[in-house]
Image (cartoon, rainbow, N blue to C red; front, side, top):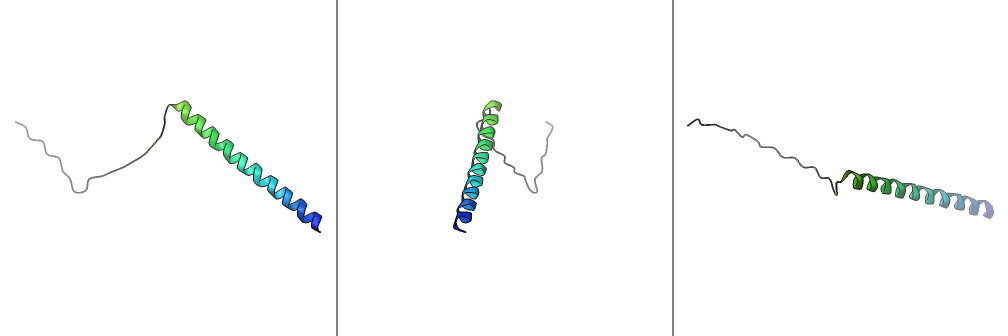
Length: 59
């Protein structure tokens, strides 16, 4: 029974290590794509004006 538990633990540890490596690889791929695009960082923002109006006056 102890041997089975040890084997299951080894398998689980191996699967976790593979998952962590996969995430690291995906992060690295994303970093390479960002570097290749020429963007150091990307940010988004938005704003709006409430109850505003623009008037033009012809002179």
